[in-house]
Image (cartoon, rainbow, N blue to C red; front, side, top):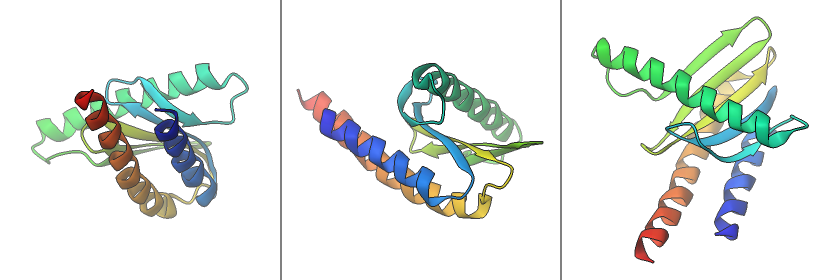
Length: 135
């Protein structure tokens, strides 16, 4: 279990390091529970748990809008604010990646890197789930 958690944490760290302007990254379940994080917060757990919940909430609302307008399954959301961004991206059907970035975040680069990270994270989460179901 620790090995899988270490791999998830490393993947999140790589995403944060590869994109200019990214300050915080979480992986959360679709219901907002924190799986792993890489944040600038001093109290890493409280900040990361809040970000996980916010990521799930924003993704859920946007997904509902897509459903109501018959636009299909939501892949990601981008919320742009005066001083930065909150991006939520699906990781299969069971998890999300939440990214906070400053105003200079390279959003285009984030889309490419986050999609690749989502694929690798999905494999890690699926393998962990399959292993726990086998036990």
